[in-house]
Image (cartoon, rainbow, N blue to C red; front, side, top):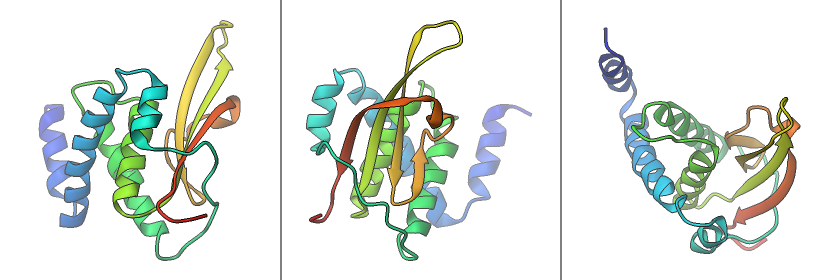
Length: 153
């Protein structure tokens, strides 16, 4: 069975709300990929970010929404015809959360690979939940923090 058939079956088994999120995630991943062609300083400016962290709040109302956005981003990023890597998924997640009036923080980090090369990584946190790019973040030194605040601090 082809991967497209498996993808279609997986999509059709989702609840209607998750299907909508997956479609939304696809479009925001495409938008983020296009944004990612520009220097990050311009991207941060376009996102209208501030250079500090959002709160580490735990919210019984917001956590299910955060988790659904994270799941949609994760599921969709694996099947885009372009590379949807850490920065792209983090930007898409930030935009999706902003649409829902939920604060988030995008982190940029650097580390040395096993071969000694400098590698970069991006991840997105909202409240106490890591929405995108959380794998291996403990290896990275944070060099940039950009938050999207939908309300006053």
